Image 1 (tube, rainbow, N blue to C red):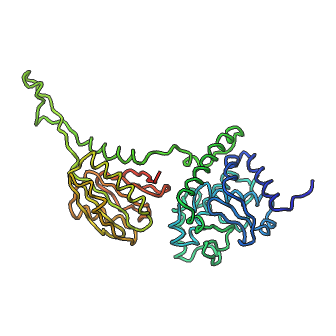
Image 2 (cartoon, one colour):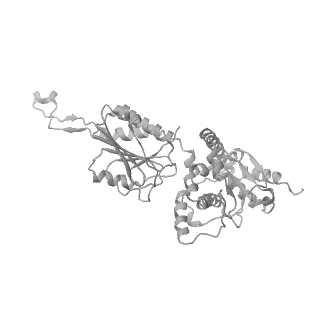
Image 3 (cartoon, one colour):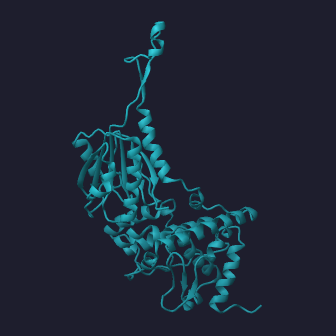
Length: 397
């Protein structure tokens, strides 16, 4: 049989092998999401989270198994939605964002095929076993410390795509230019492809992939979670008391406790103004909270705006909740230090029944320390969870 020399033919053959391998068949449908383009405008390979680009000359330098690894690498970036989810990391440090994303996907590929039966990692690809169980964000934070201490691998300078001398480029800017509708469409296509791949994996008795199961979990309605958390705290304040005995039994000389209902006294909502939460999501979240306030009718709602410090404190009372969107004046745009909210609440003796923190989740490592009241974290970044209280993930679905 003649050896395939055209890059398109080699990539097609590699796709077929990936689609029929127990190790990676789960990702067979993902290979068809987006377009594949061959161009000499990039040094190696590239993705914007949807489309994949290959330099034909670079492909010639790879063995068949290295090519398979490269194809999986680009498509795993798509699976983990890194270029849309971690835009803030790219804007903070392009090089570290690119490295973090690569460490995650390379670890996933090697975990699925540790002996290199189907794919072999090129020598210049990034891998470190210490990052195996870490998220992109966690690796980014670890690399920041390494960079400060001068311990980063020597990757060259990189360009505005943030690549340095790694295996591929990441078109973060191209990903950002995609509209919300386009991004949602791609995410839905990838999710559908993974569900189909899960069926194929079962038939071929293929490998499970850590982290992908989470992507296939049924989406929980964050609005319902938000409402349930706040109402459950409100219900827990209902208590029985002998101070007001139940009238029905007094004539029988039986003193039974009666229920004393307590409306919620103080709800605190603290909004992150660090700049990475778009105004549409912020307004959507506030609108949902306003409806909850109208239903539960807390005596007061304290709305706190914060970034690296508390920038505003607004108080709304019963009957005023319809005016919040018109009256509130969020201002900020600095860092993200949620501990300032915790301190503000304590210093001002606010004594809330519930605290809701609306944030992107890019906060200090201890998430503001211990919170001594029921606390709900409404987080826009799906990969981040607070160690304190309850976390839900807010999106504009």
